Structure formats: structure tokens, C-alpha cells
Image 1 (cartoon, helix red, strand yellow):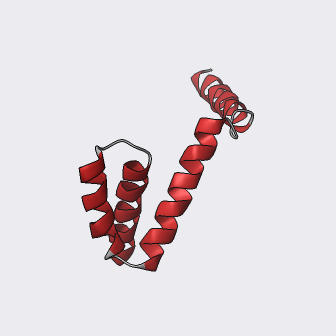
Image 2: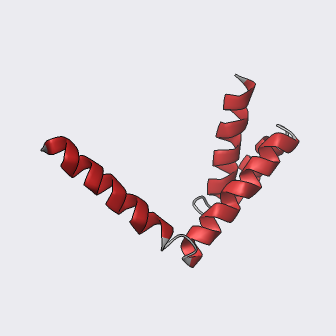
Image 3: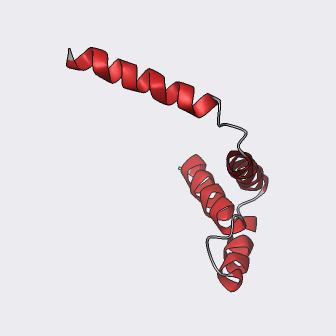
Length: 79
């Protein structure tokens, strides 16, 4: 249960850091998440870093390859 609370807190913090919410809401969420401690803070930083890398195009070559594998797998199942 603690892991679930930390994961949800990290997800909320990463969304707030990416600019999804207005600044007052982001600050309030940041204060709430900071009370969860270091594990949540590290997961939030990792989530934000992955978000920024995805925006920057770091996964452009990796994601299409995975999507094409999934499409192939779906075609094989339909046959």
C-alpha cells in the first residue's frame, strides 16, 4: 500500500512539474508530495526526466520499433 501511495504521489508531482496544472495548484501539490519523503521525490524526478526526454525526442527511434512489433504480433494473432 505504501508503494501505491508513493507511485501516485510521484505521478501527481511529475504531472504538476510538467505544467499540466496552474502554478498555485502545482505548489500545493508539491507541498503535499514533499511530505511523502525521498522515495516519492526520486520517482517524481525520474518521471519528470522521462517526460522531458520524450518531449525532446530521445525515444523517437525506440517507440516506433516497439509499435511495429506490437502490430506484427496483432497480425499474427488475427491469422
